[in-house]
Image 1 (cartoon, helix red, strand yellow):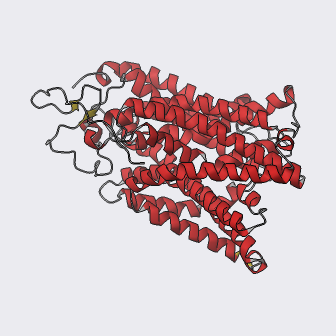
Image 2 (cartoon, rainbow, N blue to C red):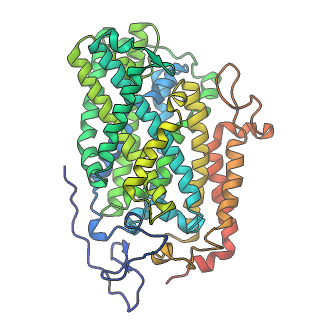
Image 3 (cartoon, one colour):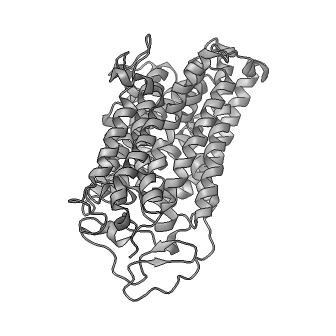
Length: 520
């Protein structure tokens, strides 16, 4: 489906020398015909998208979320909770609540996209400073690179396992290198190269790909559910798998520690969602597209994944939490081929949208004169391999309680600062030219806003200081917590980080409020 939107309303008359044009619907752009910002802090990829090119509609945003939510990593969230002892109802509840919560900062930060047409690193300049914005941008880019590696490993594993199902033992039993058959590494490399081929074609190709990938993945997931239900003898066994935790204290002792990592799963996009909403035709499109696309599709896909995982427990005696391993159980080549294509489409869909767009803009922000969007995307893809993603994906304990929990805590801290600055301090007003100009209102002290850094430091310490590893589980943290007296906060990292940084940043900025809220 091709994006369409009504033509933008005519802008209100701009006074002579006006630095930016505000349209009747609230969208802001640089005056038509005016000189665009240049210099060391601007390039074509970082400049505001003109109103005429902000064309994404509600369907485009909803399809984007369907494409990103319906993927192997989402599948492993829910099935990982099953493996940790929850039943299907508890796993669906946990993820549904998490996605309703994370939708709130997603919409708050996403508002700046359709209004100003700017990407996340430029948006962050208002709070962190024009140079200081590199700090949150690099944090977000590092997380995205790691996610890119994880998703690419998942896609490569799908190629390896499902190709082995068709090609036989010579493929799956090939000589090992680095703990895996060389054919597994080859599959990983092939999938990496496939994504690069799509990445270099740019954002418009991504939009078109998401539009058709979204329904295709839904069909594939439903087909996998029908297959496992037939193997199990109907839907009854899928729904009857009992919880090992019950609904008393044992469940709640797992629920809250699991809730924060589930929020952390999309805390990445709660920061850089302006990278996408900057193409939005209006606020209504991004609001309804995200509201309909994120919590609903995550919940429905979660339901599919937990039912299939419960089915594997009924059929094979133990839950299988990786979708590629479930698909490898299919005993006919047509089914295996369809499953392979579905998993690959799902993985490419989320990986490029969620884990390449952000670091591409973030890396471009570091050196606008040298790094374009495409160059940044390739750098991110290379770094994604260098972080050894197969180790992060090795078990539910490491994946959920170490990786997602820690990432979510740090990114929640950045989100608190962005929300406080945009909504409380600036009341959603930004001055576009100053976002690209040395010495302007966002220059602060040498391009850095120490208040944002102080709020991040305080929120970060409280958010991850209590991180700990439970006895009997794998993890890098000490059992008593990194900072023992903060251990009680360890299960609430995202909320603690966001709340602390939001409050502290607001207090520190109140003394500058008149200056930052001024109108140009």
